[in-house]
Length: 517
Image (cartoon, rainbow, N blue to C red; front, side, top):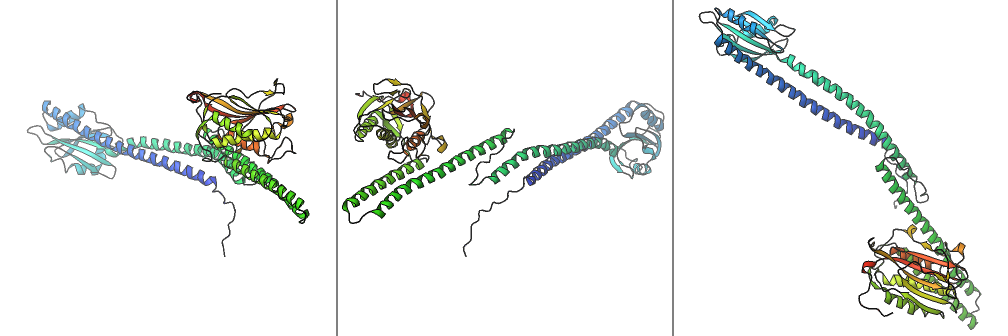
């Protein structure tokens, strides 16, 4: 059994999960950074404390040596007391003086005197016999000490010793107080960061949630929804770009629907006409058979023209459909004029032709120009004058039968709603001019209220005239693909001027050599 494809819309993952992940990730990074910095500070504080302790021990050793060399005391006990009375202990340290193995004097700067720590005194008795001094770490139930023992003895008397005792835990605790302050500040900062992230992410994701709702509500049958433009620059750019894309999609879809409806209507008409005549035709009447045959061929020819026009319009917005080659516009104008004279008995006139070299698709430009000529023939009488020209000035004026200028407004039409433009490479803004391929007639003209609608597909100024109604739409599509537009001057009962306006680089526009006009 074949699997069935469904159009069920998959629900988008809630943005709340993203908000939680964003918060968790940010806080995790912050905590890791704070912990790493705290560990670094702690190790630095421990190293600084240890370095300071050993510097104190070196200072103590130097001071004892200096004292022993210059002092004169009768007994060792007097020498020990004399040193302690002249020195102040370092922070978190104490001096102990021993005489003949017993504690003789002490001096300290902390809350718990070292002389009351029996475990410390018992450990010191192991180092007192040292003759050259020593520095050791002593651990007791109270704390951890760094002790420096230096022997001191007056000649002829019993031995003594001076001891520097430094409380390592007290010094480290001083450093840790700063770390506790740091961690407290860090915890407060992380808490504020958490609150800030929740608030900012809520503001940011609120706009994203609106965008998600719009995107979920948008489908092929309803493209009218638009995203709200946020005050945030980044989100406003995203929303504006998405809205522009929806505008293009909506316009494209609407154009596609209109095109399909119009094409369907135009194709049904000749089918209905031919079918109706075939049903009532007398198969035994040669004249009637010939008449129906001619009608069928005419309708088929109209269907072929309609198909070709639809194909051109559909391909006009596709890159690669148009060629981009140098065109001798003077020769192209002569070709158009020569082809125009075969379209009907009119008073043909070749107007001003400015010699130019243009980069574009010669075949499509000639097709568009000939479409304007054909349109002029269709809406003018046999005694009408039709003039063809190419200029780089403004849109040519409308003339009456006597050659007088008739004041009219210029209506411009581009194909910007039908897709991207131009399809061909864009031309430089510097030295960029406009050339106009125009056709002027003094036919029936176009009513003022119909002039803005005459460019629409399947719109005819006179519905009784033959044609697919796609002629001007095709011309507009070709002009737009070249970066140009279509212009119109018209007055009912006087005539019309249609002009294809195309941008051209005038700095390289002149044809090399002389051109005979």
